[in-house]
Length: 283
Image 1 (tube, rainbow, N blue to C red):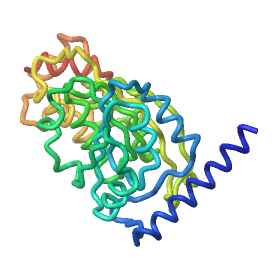
Image 2: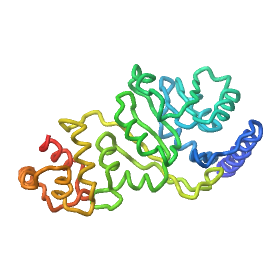
Image 3: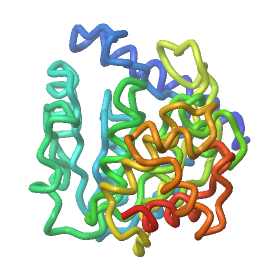
Image 4: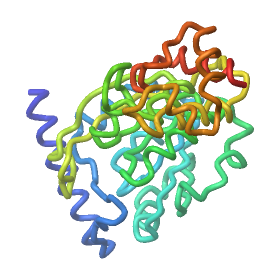
C-alpha cells in the first residue's frame, strides 16, 4: 500500500510541477541547469537527512517550484530560499504566500552576500540541487563559513565521485583535498535522471557535507597554494610539481624528507594529513 501511495504522490508531483509551469508561463532553461525533482522518495530522504527541528534556519539553494521548499517550511523555524529565475520567484511567492517563516530571495547565490545575511546565526543548514557550473566553487565557499552547520546537497554524480575519491584514485583533485579539509563528506543516495523533469543526461548524488570544527594548518592560503601546486602537473612527482612554484628542489627534498614524505609520490596519492604536514613544513 505504501509503495502505491508513493507512486501516486510521485505522479502528483509531476502533474503539479507541469501545471505550475503552465500557470506561470514557465519553460525550464538548460543554461541554468533547471531540472525539477519530482520523486517523493528522494524529497523525503533530503528532509530526513537534514534532521529538522523548529529552531533550524535553512538556506535552500535553487527553490524551483517549491516541492522541497514547502516541506522545509513545515518542519523548520525559518527557510531562506534563494532562486535566480524571476518567474520561479513569482511562482514561489504566490503559491507559498501563507508561510510566514519563508523568505524568498530572487538572486544569483554566487553573488549574494551570504556572510552578511547569516553571520549572526551559527547553525544554518543548507539544502539544494546545485547546477554543475557552480557546484564546486559554491561548496568550497560554503564549507569555509562558520555559520554553516552542515549541507545536504545534490550534485552531478561525476562531481560526487571526485569529492569522495580516496588517496590513489585518479578522480582525486584539488577540490577533493580542499573540501575534505574543511568538511566531512558522506554519500546519502544516488539519484537517477528519471527523478527529475526534464530528466538530465547524467545521474546525480545526494551528499551530506558537515563542516569541521578544528583545522590544523598554520595558514589556509598557504595550504591552498600547496594543494594547487601539487596537482598542477598531476602525473609528475611531488617534488617536481611543487618546484614549479619556484621552490628550490634540494630545499623541497630536505623538507619532505624531514616529515617522512617521499618526493617521488604523486599528489593524488597523498592523504589530507600529509598535505597538512607539507603545508606547515613549507610555511
